[in-house]
Length: 461
Image (cartoon, rainbow, N blue to C red; front, side, top):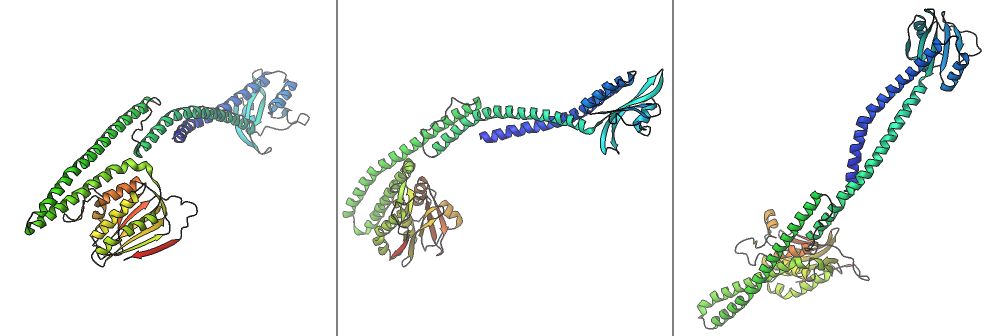
């Protein structure tokens, strides 16, 4: 941010310098021209009114200033020429400025010299004796003299502009840093709060008044969010724990009642017990969701391949009882970061969902693959699948494909919470089998030394 503010200030300053400096430089250039012409004309007047002509002074003047002085008589023939001090008289009567001066006019301007092949800046004034024009004085300078003065003026303006830029850069840096530092601290506090450090607060003592007020507002928001989250966690935890006791007591009563109930009424009691079991799973799921954020900072390196193989082995008997084949494809090792115990719950929930939609003789495939984004866990079923809208809604709490679907509707919500808490993500894709490909991506972690990454696969059926 400091760099952006500094560039902004300097850009505005450069625009201002260009807006005012260029016209000022052009004005200086015209001023230097007028100034030089005024000085030349003044010198020519002095020479024209000096009687007799001070020859030595004129040559000194020409040598010191780099100009050329020509004095002509009434016929335009030179009586003095600083460029040819010992030469014969030359005829200057054809020069336009000499003609104007001999006619009594004072002229100045620039013209191209065919003999010198350069532009000249000239001033020509008449010399008078007893009220009559007796000759003329012409002083010429190469335009390089004027250009040198103009360049000097531009150089002075440039140095002044550089000085202004340096001063503005210094002030802008101090101002930008005074703004950027508290904003950077506020940004860091925001990141820490977003990552789960709910005790984070912004510094309200530094920065401009607006930023201090923003920090105060942020702290109020953080306090409010912390209170809300704490209240939610307490409510979920208390409600879940309080539900367990009456649920257990009710189950015992139903089981005792079942032994004394006639056979025709027992299916109703079995259905009530099944609902109690579903209520128990719901309570456990709520507790899992409640603990999800609290353990965000404890993610550790986990061998995803090993965990998947272990869970597949644990589900082997249940899979066989459902007459479903379970195919597992993993490399020897695939290391990623995950919350302790989170991956086990993720795999269990995904396998449970896959088995719910699998018919006898179907195959559920669990695959671990390395990807640029991390380590991917795929659980692919051969069920009826879900449309695009349902795949997006499936991660919502208590969502079920149909009202008659088994389960609490929290399994995928738990999967997403645990995946995101581990720094990863979860999604549902369309499988090649027509079913659902549930994908969990976990951030990669360096494997321990000595662990090979060769790929191996096996299948359970």
